[in-house]
Image 1 (cartoon, rainbow, N blue to C red):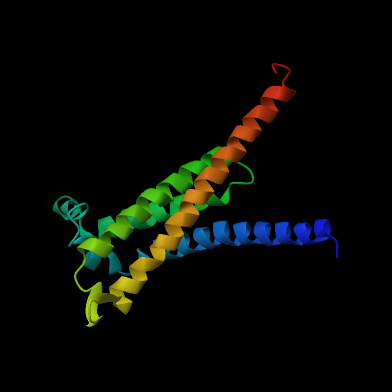
Image 2 (cartoon, rainbow, N blue to C red):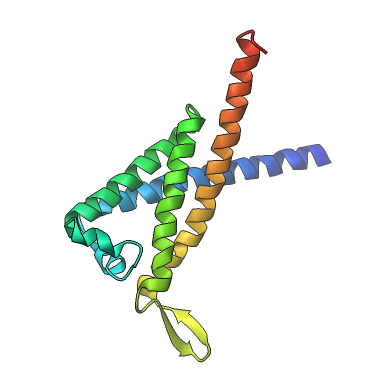
Length: 167
């Protein structure tokens, strides 16, 4: 196998990883978003957050859950349209970053996230600690999809500019 053949295989792996990452994020956001309509798992997390607990003064638990769920579903749909509308996909990725930053803040504000079972090293609880920690990877994917979509949108603009005779 030549070096070029090897690099082509590596490029295929990279492309597959990018596709799995993008649409894995889409599936996770949409599925969790839909879940907000049938269960109230976010209330326990939100009620301890100084950044978000104030919303319960204005909205019911169900309304907050529905709003978050809707935002997650919208972000997922927008991220998914990257092949057709990269600029729109960037908006979805930015929404996902904001949503995931909110969720990651619960690692600091929610009681019971960590326990001192291992002496000085805090151990994450399964619920809510490990559940919340996954969002660290998801926010990395969301930041990557944001950058990727912005690059694709700029390339699309440059292509349109060159082909419409103004370039």
